[in-house]
Length: 291
Image 1 (cartoon, rainbow, N blue to C red):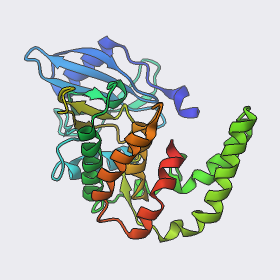
Image 2: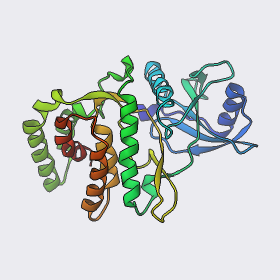
Image 3: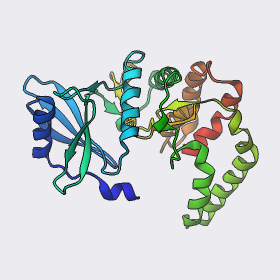
């Protein structure tokens, strides 16, 4: 993947320097996980925490601006997404030169405390209900947001999933798995693809995976979703996809996912009232596409 060849290579000293120079923050820095960008956890002497985000060298400025505007839009409607902070100069998007001489865009957002869903061994029914409720809240808020940059040809756009499956299926060496994928793709092409244009489209987060969903509370039935991070895969696409992605990851690696799925779906359906009935009827296919 070309993007991964252009991942930023800033060290901790670079991060602390950028924090002070751009944002006036004297802080320590620790690395945070990221696939194609670079993130640092900043902590000041007063224990305030922020996330310094350094974008991939190939990242499009307009797409980053779309993400910034989406975060600002969501700040008026939901409480589980990071807040964007401006530089000393009042810029929401700064540009810096990397040690290799490349140009990178830099942003600072608030830190959301919580544990990634992937690290939570047991998902309580209350947590799964809250997951459906929170994702639905974000989708309702994003339904009134749009930006030209999210109307893009994107590998992870569910509308393009059949093309991606067809391109990648020949790489599957396991014959049984390859046959299963081909059968599902054929059914999708026959039963779902012709009807996709009738389903609701909107701006979506598009990546509510189990590392982008943060959980708070305790293990005594008080678990709740406290964060949804990383808007890098935003796209204008099928509204049902956000809930589908969240559920696909909630049942990932479960020995018997059906109880988890049923609990999630019950919560999800109660929060899908704004979706057209047609979208609800193809919801299972969306989960399958990301599972």
